[in-house]
Length: 108
Length: 395
Image (tube, rainbow over all chains, first blue to last red; front, side, top):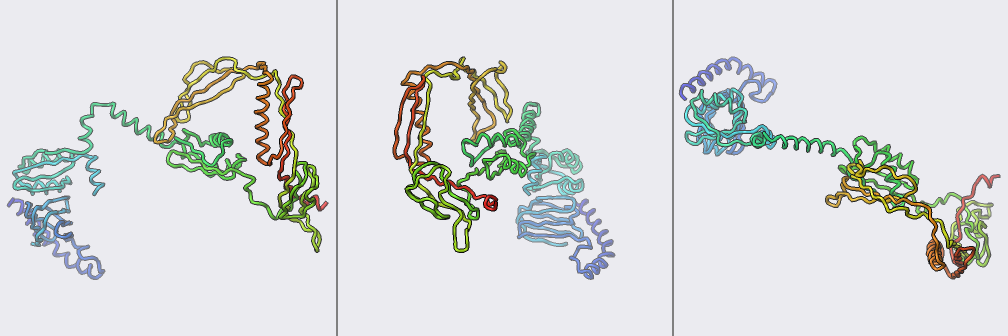
């Protein structure tokens, strides 16, 4: 668990560094052209329906998963869902759907 | 979502349980290898998830790599449902036959319904439509309905309107027959009323034209009763003569029945020929050939019915009665009975258009025949419309 977590953290750090160069420029272009936020810079998109379902796009991996916690590695950081009876309804290479009783969402 | 469920059912899916090792790593590796997992749950150390049946083989490698022990707890979907029948070729053949039969017969006409036609024209209309392709067993997607409707109207004199509609494999032919009495009058066409029979005028009710006779006058057939040429202050005007002219007429009906007659009589016992009827194809269930000579034929059919709809499958039975000319001798009493029956039929026809006031029947035997003569005094409308030919007036 620890070894895999470190690998993902290293990957995040590398991406954060490289993204830093383009993020500012991308954001400027977005503002200039009035494009939807995040359309040019690669960030995760999160859509929550009530507190029962969350659709996350831009997922790069699962860091931790249990009935109470789902920790996902996203493009712009780590998302932590806490709740009860959390289920990964769908999981693909870059998206996940979490259902269950969601109590909180954290961005780390 | 429903579509996805159908696809999953068609391709088959499995529910597995895995424990030990690194569940998160398993999920990440599965996602990286594009193995779809759904309904993934964690209960303590146990991970439960669903995957496509064909992906489970790949997942086994991942279980080994992540140090997990896994086993399938449920398999479902069409491949698993069909698996018990994989050695039963008959079921596959039956399914294929079902599809082929459905494909073949669903595009064909099963039933032809005709509505709006009188009994005497029914057979002729159905025969004409069958000649144009609207018959049991024909493919309805190959029919050019507008052209068929136009051709049918041109060929069938008794029909004034015709439509063919398809309701699945049922062809509904709706017709309206031509009825001259229901045709709207032509008020602009000048016409005369002439006498259709000899008689004495009793009453005249003229609504158009100028009367040329009066009650009490004796008229002969063809005589002008009401003229369409009306005299006016500006000269003669042409109009349509309309009205009812009631007259007392005399009709004589004669029926002659010879005591010795040449008649067509049954020569042998009838021959019955059954055939199997299947989608317009008649398969004979007899082996003897054509029966030559004079014969009467009749046909009965017993078709399969389903929910009161006649199916194009059944048995037809043709009765062939060989006939030959033979001599029949009637007694005077029998001949009289036949003559009275025939005269009654003629009288009934006469009574359709006239009111019979007085009847006189004479019976006599002349030259080996029974002759029945009926003299009828009737009251009837003898006005018969005849258009005025303008060319005749000009000349």
